[in-house]
Image 1 (cartoon, chains in turn brown, purple):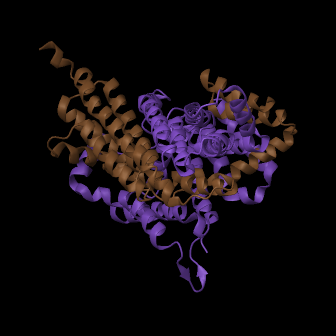
Image 2 (cartoon, chains in turn purple, cyan):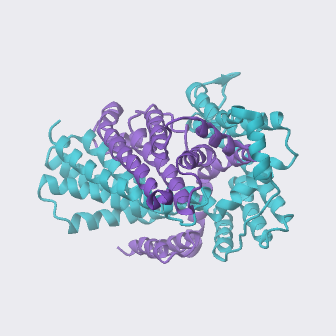
Image 3 (cartoon, helix red, strand yellow):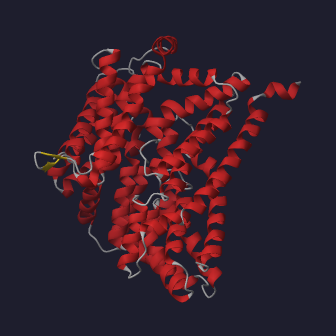
Length: 227
Length: 318
């Protein structure tokens, strides 16, 4: 039970807003000590795990090309593209991205999105442009809200789309774990039963995006209320 | 054969470039902090495989100390003005999207077609890492195409990359740190302890109680660990298999599929899932680190409710 102290360290550390890297290091130390490891063994275990997890940070290789394209106006071009389309709103644009992301993820194409490659250079500026087109100059609060929503759409569409594909990591993990426990299921069955949740996610978040348009109308267009 | 090691060398060189350019950036009062941070990360990518576990641990500790002391500033490399950007966007048109689309297109092509490709009898790519290697290759190809077309100043790609990585700051290694913490948790048996508590203190005598405990447990444990993959084996071994499947005769495929998706609801709510929730906030320059999580909370709550009801309605019927 003592090993759970490390979990407590994480929860408290995040709540009091210490630097998360410090919190993680402290939690690893506490957890290791509680499990009876000596400090040097903990350091070695953490060092090995960090080294083995380098693939997680490989995504930053896209930054030079994204930054370079931004220098030559990528985000501005994304804005101009939206400004020319008729009938685009923030909610409709994000809903279209949600559908595209969810469908492509359900076909196993999870790398066709993501925050550094798609959301920062393209989706977020497009969403802001859609709002500017409708309301003119945006208050800072509305701008931040739109950006946060662009990031959230990428996550939610990915999470509730990818499991419909039979060869995605989580499906393989489920199959492997159940097999070890003596229960045989086919990846196909697992992915079929991910479909009801995928549809539900589209309905729930789609409805919230429609409501987002209404909410923005109230907050982003203060002039409307004066009239 | 091209393995992840080659990708690490390329990434290491990029981080080394960020570090060297940071040293020269007098606009940043903490430039030596930035240089040390990206320099250490470069060392980890370039030499990590040869360093040994304790040395790698010491390297991580140094990164943590730098971040904890607030040693990183934000560099301001010379870049184009907003007017120049609009002008360039007008002149170059939609071709600007081209290089950006090379990245996912290459990742897609590699994943679909190069998985089992051979060159002179040797596999071309490490087949377990095809997507990551293709993604990295896509980034390099896209950069090459952009340089050939736009003819930027020599150091511009690295400077622009540094501009972006500095806005992310130490959060850039948060996902990797959390993955490592997960390994230490696993080594110390944290998952088992949580599973014991769940089964000892929760009422689990009826089918709906087991479903409720399993779905909410998956979400809560995922929120704590930051990863549904860590929560799934624990909660499924503690509640899913023994109760829902064996005792109440539920369908294991439905239990597992919707159980995992309940875990994903937890992922949407937690700063521990840094690459989905915290890093985007930094990338989009939101002042509130939890800005993305706050938007996701209502959807996460509704989806968890929906998943629980779906599981209860489906798992005992098929």
